Image (cartoon, rainbow, N blue to C red):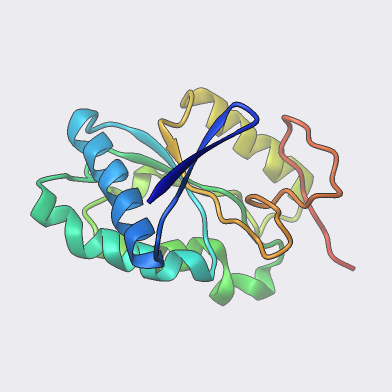
Length: 165
């Protein structure tokens, strides 16, 4: 592990993916022990499959619990036809069913809404009503994008509905 300072941010580089999972899981589980009702943000995608397996297999041993945690999914596909491959389903299959989180405390944008822009606004209201996330997990894309923010996009604080044509 080595630490870098880049434009005022602290970046930690790990020697392997396993070391990264262990460090990220340790940060999450420590947070849950210190603040059992933490608000966390979760990402989806290939990077997170093994990470969530790691978290699920270690949380009970650590003495941490997700029982009172509120979790927010980062994004969601739009369209009812994508239900089986939705990020909501991804989080259920890869994490929520393997930990003791209350399903009522899990939130994700409504990708099945007939009004995606309205669903994004509604999700924004839910996010704001719960205050800040104590910990947010984000993926780093092969082109350098962080989370769902592609490099060419103008960054705003508002939630957006993206449609690929």
